[in-house]
Length: 162
Image 1 (tube, rainbow, N blue to C red):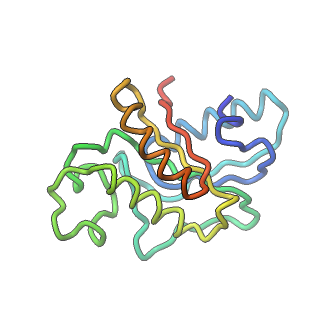
Image 2: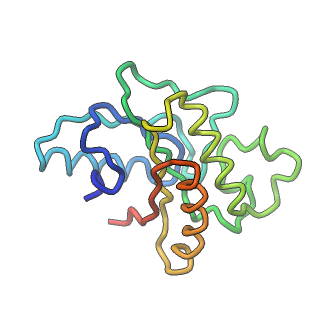
């Protein structure tokens, strides 16, 4: 199911970038691949220290050779919380006011920066807005998804709660 939502059926080596549930996503995807008999390697890049967002900053994620797709994971739970509390690596991008609440523009900025940092072409990139645990977060995610999809990116929002 998640393989199809993220369009990963043909992928063989997938980097999970960003924050907000990479370990859970990896476990779900590995289970689905095992059940379908599809060989695929999923690996996580970078640590967000439990925060909803991660910016790689000047240090791009170290992608393994042969990586054919990357999924940027961003936690919707960051919205309305102070940036310094929800974004690992915020120092450069949000240093002017790290105590201000994270909004949709900030979340999109983090996603776009991580997409750019991956160095992969758009066709090999996916975005998962995680933590869409409530109806209100789904509503807020719809505008973010539309913005990403208007840029030609494959993006989805859901909750990885299991």
